[in-house]
Each structure stands twice: as structure tokens, then as C-alpha cells.
Amino acid sequence: MKIQSIKGMYDLLPQETKNWKQIESILHKFFTIHGYGEIRTPNVEQTKLFKRIIGDETDIVTKEMYSWDDRNGDNISLRPELTAPTVRAFIEHNLSKLNKNTKLYYIGSAFRRERPQKGRQRQFCQFGVEAIGSEFPEQDVEIISMAYNIYEMLGIENLELVINSVGSDESKLKYSNELKKYLSKYSNDLSDISKKRYENNPLRILDTKDKKEKEIIINAPNILDFLTKDEIEHFNQVKRYLDKLGIPYSVDKNLVRGLDYYTMTTFEIRTDTIGSQDALCGGGRYNNLVEKLGGKSIPAIGFAAGMERLVMAISGKEETEDKVDIFILSIGDLAIMNALKICDTLRSRLGVNVRMDLSRSSFKSQMRQANKLKADYVVILGEDEISKNIGIIKTMSSGEQTEVPLDTIHKNFDIANNE
Ligand code: AMP
Image (cartoon, rainbow, N blue to C red):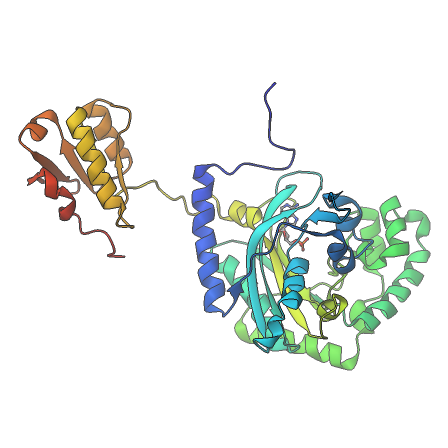
């Protein structure tokens, strides 16, 4: 019987990895010019890290994590997200000592045992940033605008930025009690999931997809009415800065996001171009997280974005072509040996993309390959040429052909290091 990949986990084949690498390299550059340094944390962490940070009662922790007992008795998990590991590493390595503001970004795998569908895998890749140190709205806006600009820069259409504020833990608690009071009138109309959430995590009911519950929620108390004056002022300042930057947004009082750790600003970016799983990225402040993990009381904000959904949103927009600089055509043993040598010499100068045929194909078929790969130059090493100790360099744009001595062919290509 054939062995297949695990449900919800996919292979990325060369055609796809090519696009991924391009996007990854744009992301690396983008984050670097904003002053963010890359962090790479392990795929596996202590389960208690996620329980403490994401919340004991969240879907992720209760039913989506891949967890097991290690041989030494520790319970460990594949990371379902990268904020908790990043904050763990921030504290473990005392990064606040180096800078007042620590700015980190990551690109890495995350694992959640969700029901797979388009845009939802069990292993997926998240990229994201965490800015740890500033409590001020300008930091919120740097993060939100970075997220928005990535998608805009990559030409994603129909972007929708939604923002909200859930206030401090105290405001959240006050609101949560009021929300429960309101929802208690509808307890018979709530789904089983929402009944459970009512007890453990009532704010999550605001995220409901259920039509009937959505109607109930329309008249639910508004979280923004439970924020303190300072919290409202922070939110207003975020909106003013976004206005100044010309970034369009709407406020959704029900945007609380699934993870427990958010305080104050929350946001999400969506597009209707990728199907029902339309969230490209989500983020917000988590002012208590560092302290909750045993660090100092340091405010922070970040976002996490799905790589697969970004690739999906881009696909079809920027079809990248397979293209080479030079194709070496070789007929006969001696020609093959020389072609191998020229390829080797040119490839050692990174930047030259050179190919040769490795299947002893006919002259005609090798020419077809060179055309398909849109080679700028073709080097012809036929039996005739080899016997005269030369090669022919053909410039494909003009059709011009030049005979050159075999052992100096590589010197005619000054493509390397010109970029
Ligand atoms: P979250 O950590 O749940 O806030 O998710 C942040 C982003 O990660 C989402 O907006 C998605 O783009 C992406 N994401 C989350 N879960 C999945 C998944 N199961 N499959 C693919 N992408 C996901």
C-alpha cells in the first residue's frame, strides 16, 4: 500500500517553492528595513507554555494541539502559533537588556489539528512580527501599517482592515460580565459550543458564524463602552494615525480574536479573493503576556499571518517564468565532459544560471529546451566543434554566432556578480 502524507499536511513542489522563496525574500527585506530582526524558535515547546499564554479554554489548546508525553515525562507540543515561543525566547535570553524596544519577526511552521479545507491546513506557515517595549499608539500603527502594506505592495485586491479595542484585562472582565447578563436571556438559542463558551470564554461568542447567534449579537453591549477614558484615547489616536497614513479601516466592535492574550488594540486583514477562510492576518496588543510568562511588565504588540493564504491571494498575479542565462548544447562524450566543466566553472560564480542536457538528447531537442528556458546564450559543442577545439556562442536575441576556443568559453560570460 502506498504511504501518503498526513491529512491536512502538504508537500510544496519546486513550482510552488519558487514562489514561496520569492515571497519569503521580499518579507525578509521588508521586515529588515523596518528594523525587525529574525528569530527562529524550535517547532516543539512545553505544552504549559501554550496553555498559559493562549488560554486553557481556547479551541487551540483544548482540541487542536498535537501534544504528547516525552520519554522524560514532560508534556510537549508542536507549536500552534509563534507568539508564545517568541515571548518565551525574549524572556529566556533577556533581550530587553539589549534594547528598550525589541523588534522581532519570524517565518515558520505552525500546527493545528483543525478540519482541513481550502486555506486551512493542519501544518501551515506563519510569518509575523512582535514589537516588545512600547505601549504607545504609534507602535500599534507601525505594526498595523506594516501588515497592511505587505498585502498592498504584493498587489492583493479587496483588502479589508478591521480594527477594535478590547481594553485592559479589567475592562475585558467588566464587559464579559455584562455580555453574559445579556446572553443569559437567549440561553436556549445558543449552540452547544456557545453554551460552553458562555461559561469559559464568553467573548468568543462574538466570533460566531451561526446565523441565529449573529442576530442575537447585533444588540449585545458594545465593548468600546466599557473601556476607560485612557483606553478610548489610545484607540482614537490609533485611528487618527491610520487616517494620516491614508490606510482605510473599519471598526468592528465584535472583533475580539480567538486567543485570550489580547488587550487593547486588535485587528484583522481580510480579502474576499481566497474563499471562506478569508483572514490573511490577525494581531493586536498583548500588554500582559511577558509578565504572565514570568518576565517584567513590558507592553507588546504583534501580528501573525498565514503564508499559504498570502500565496493563494498572489497566485496568478505574478507568474514567474523558468529562465536561464546560458544553455550548453553538447553532442558526444568529449562535448559532455567539456559542458560539465563549463557549467561547473560558471556556477561557482553565483548568479549565472546555466543548464545543460543530461539525457543525451538530440541536437534538435536540446535546442528546444534552450528556447523553452529562454536562454540568452546557447553554447554549441557538437562533434565538429570539439574536433576543432572550439565552441560556438550563439546570442539568441540577434542570432549572432561566434567561435571561441574551448578552454576560454567561460570567460565570455560576464553575467556573474553584475546584479
Ligand atoms: P491566528 O494565529 O489564529 O490569529 O492566525 C493568524 C493567521 O494565520 C490567520 O489569519 C491565517 O492567515 C493563518 N492561519 C491560522 N490558522 C491556519 C490554518 N489552520 N491553516 C492556514 N492558515 C492559518
